[in-house]
Length: 431
Image (cartoon, rainbow, N blue to C red; front, side, top):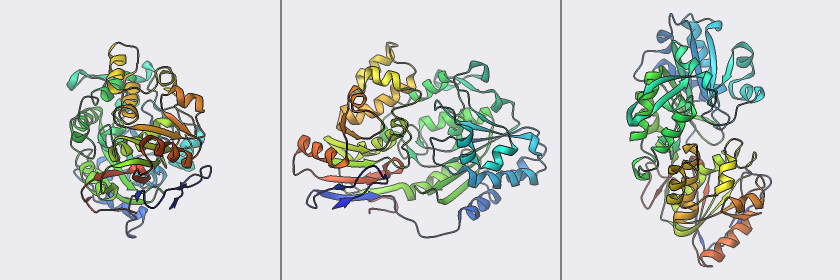
């Protein structure tokens, strides 16, 4: 069977029928209400909070925080509805500004902000990149649970209403995106980002992945509420940026309901572990740092000792911010990375967490082959993983590693997938 990829530069891969377990993807939901209708309805019936037009009445400084270019959320679909609510509350344009929640990602360009928020928005309102690496742009909220000092963007603390716009999907680090994550760690300083990521390392995956209520999420919510996150608007969407659902309201109550709805779409039933897993990372292909989302998913599906073949253009290479340390040390087994972090040779901790996530698949559990034209074969080798110029060559190498009779599973859009291996998913979906 020939299986195509969502990239012009990579041909499809031919998998022998006798080897193919299946091609798995998010299911296409039945047509429903349009995105604008869903967003409007969510704002008119918020969960756990008064309507935004009531909450915003009398506010003098409103900060709207959205996820950045590393997330494909069509914030431009949501922003006009939020602005309409603010204007209905009597909030004037000069009281409204926007913040891009970068975490430790690179700054967004003006053109990227316009694409994310809409050209009219960036013309009418100030839009700021979160300056995670500028001490002068941060203030301390004090030390929270687990001894974490919370350094947050000063503009967040100066606002008298903070609204978070984002998207809910499964993620390894805290179960699901969305909710308070837009501030914690989206608008935090480097030390807080490091600590928030590092506490995840020793918490078992099964206590976090696909679970909206977990220790990491509870810490995020506590800190986000203290930082002043007063209202969220979170969408559920497909890989083509179509809005499938929307929740609005309290950062915990609305988010938990959003996770419940999102889970039904993102869960994919897979009959059992595969010897070889082929996956693309679409639409998370800006850099290898993003591709890790698809590798995390593939790692849940591949059998111990198997092979993951990850296909992505990695348009901006390994990482515009963190590449040096990864190229210096490469992806290694979990305990080696922990030792490097604990002895201070790898900092910040967020880099160590990323390296452990990739290493868990590439070293501890299975083997990893990367198919890309965005990172040189030499640098892929320095990363400590395999390289192939085409998906077919990647599969050929994988067969050599685990045998010609190996069973192959293909994951399409794995970065957004919550695989349920060996049992039925909530709604069940294979393709």
